[in-house]
Structures are given as structure tokens and as C-alpha cells.
Amino acid sequence: MIIKDKEFGEVIVRKSPLSRGIRFSVSTSGRLAMSVPTYTSEFLAKRFLNSNREIIREKLPIKNPNEQRARDYQKKILAKKAREYLPYRLEYYAKLYGYSYEKCRLTHANTRWGSCSSNKTISLNIGLMKVPEVLRDYVILHELAHLNHMDHSKDFWAEVASHDKNYKNHEKKLKMFSPGL
Ligand SMILES: [Zn+2]
Image (tube, rainbow, N blue to C red):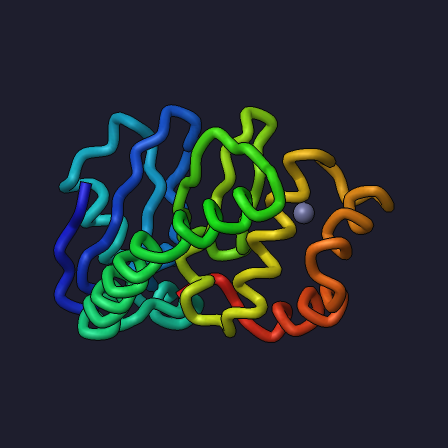
């Protein structure tokens, strides 16, 4: 459920049977998010929002409605670029080094650049489109190496190193960027 609010813009209301009380947080888009018990009505959610307005304003870094929309737009552009690039780049390196994976998934998590699951799905963050190509390639090679080693063991790093000699430097440089938008 989305509540339109004059001050906070679109407020995301997530109903969860596990949630006992009402909790406020900030969504990845900078919107105010509320998690509420399943039975909570819109009326009740709005009332709760109104009575906590001041504390939300003070404590939570909510983006204003214009910034929220700007971020949506930026994400849309980035997702489009990513769709047109990352799956092909992954395929290129997989072919080059003889890896086979099941599928490529694009994500926009705030914390991870990529992941590789045991069912051979490789996930890549659309935020990779913001980092230099050499770091983007490093993440791809890192995830491909996980197809053979599902850990960060010595053998894993040796495999990464065989495709990217400067991987340590790339791993370090990547920390200067954040996958979130
Ligand atoms: Zn890893």
C-alpha cells in the first residue's frame, strides 16, 4: 500500500504478519517506509504517521518527493544500461574462460555488487554501471570464479588471480564506490 503524503511524498506501507507494532524506516529510494501488522487499515497507518511526524523528520533521512522521483529516474536509466551491457559482458567472460552458469539476474541491492548462488545464478548489481570498466570486469570475474569455489578460499582467489592479476587492487578500489543509488 502507498500513502501519498504532503510532506514525505509516497510512503510505502508494508504489511507483515510478523510485525507487532509499527516501525518506520527509509527505503532504498529514500522514501519513508512503514512496516505494520497485517490488519492495519489505511486510516490507522495515516494516523500513526501524523502522530510521529516530528520524530520522523528529525531521525530519518527521507528524501523530498522531487529527489525521490529523480532517484527513480536515475535508477531506470541505470537499469536500462545494465540490461544492455552486463548479461553480455558476463557471457563474454564465461565463454572466454570456459564457465557455464544458469542465468544472469540484475539486482539493485544497496550492499552487494554481485553474488553467485549454488544453482549457478549470477546476480549483478545495476550500480556496476557507475564504476570504471576494470572494476566492473573484476566483479564479473569474481562471481564467475565462485562457480567453481563457493567460498573465499585460497583456491578461489588463485582462480580470480588467473583472470585478473590486479584483483587485490580492484577489490580495494571497489570499496570507494557504493552499489546503492
Ligand atoms: Zn565472493
